[in-house]
Length: 316
Image 1: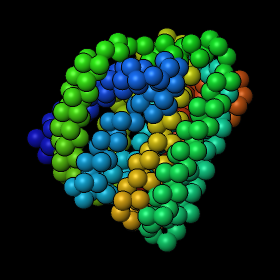
Image 2: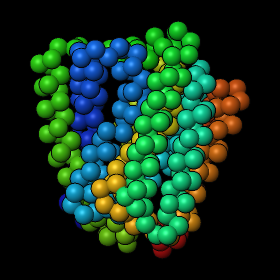
Image 3: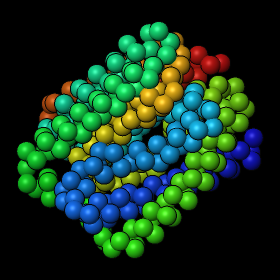
């Protein structure tokens, strides 16, 4: 058990390092081959933090641990809103200038509801997985279209986020390092998580939902608090909403498109509705004064802790 925890922690460390390297490589290569800094920054803000989780879920899928991958994908969304946003806002109130995030939040609720509907028969079919992937394409088109209507200063802030060196050789080295580091990080996490979960009486599904989802989110929590301190509330909330959409539409959709994915009844009754509840809690915060205050951050964090407590109470 202790050995598994050590490997799990080392895996999380490698995922954090690899995630940083691959984001820089992706930004540099995108701009090298013609993407504007604004487009590169927009995609990195929305989906860049999902890449380590994607690698973990891909590894779990390849080795046949679909339940672990599903638990991580859905659990990460609850962790994103409750823990990441909650702690970031509690540390420094988040000022959100862009109106684009509210419709994306609505789409996140719709995606969660679609998963519930798809899962009523106990499985997400290949065709339903393809529908989710097409949904991601639609979200991407909306994001690229609507973002250009945002204020110039916000567009410049997003472009600055993608600032990095664009030399081809440097970014190929970054990409190679990221590939190796992410491979071993995902391998160690996926190997250790079921052992840790079993030691705590958890199924692979619950291990993905709690320790893996929370563990892979910890570097993002640290980054979110640092960004909140710099006044980059748009970046923090954009990361959370974009990552959550990516998890449902690309990760779950992609796995189902490759192989029909069983969806436990508990997910239809509890976890996915819980994810929608967190979205509904966040929506009025973004539609109101465009600020997530310390008090609202505390509410999100308490709701997250209550959800974790409920999951553990149902387990034990």
